[in-house]
Image (tube, rainbow, N blue to C red; front, top):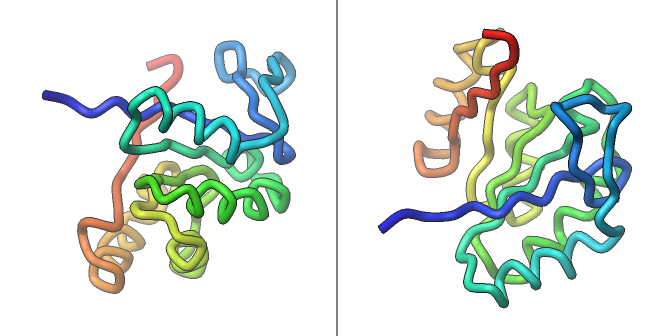
Length: 135
C-alpha cells in the first residue's frame, strides 16, 4: 500500500498550479484552501500536501501562512513546505497544526538546519524534499 499526497499549491492565498514551475504561467483553481482540502479528504485522502509557492520564490507568502490553520483545522495530516528557511519557520508551521514540515532549498544550502530541526522537533516532524529542474 502507498500514500497519495494531494497537493494544494498556494500563491497569494489562492490555489494554483504552475506550468513547468513558471510563476508567470499559473492556473487558478480557487481561493478557499480549506474547501479544497475537504474535497481531497472526502475523496479518501489521509494526508494533504500544502505548498507556499510565494515562500518558494522568496516572497512573503503572508496570505498562505494565514490560510494554513484553516487547512490544519480539517483534522487531516498536513505536510507543509515552501520558503521554510529557519527553525522559527519550522516552529511557526508546527504551531499552525502542521504534522510534518518539508525542508527543500534550505536543506541544500544549510544542511545543519535539517539536523537542528530534527533534534528540536523530532524526525517524524521533518522531511526533506528534492524538487529538481534541468538536472
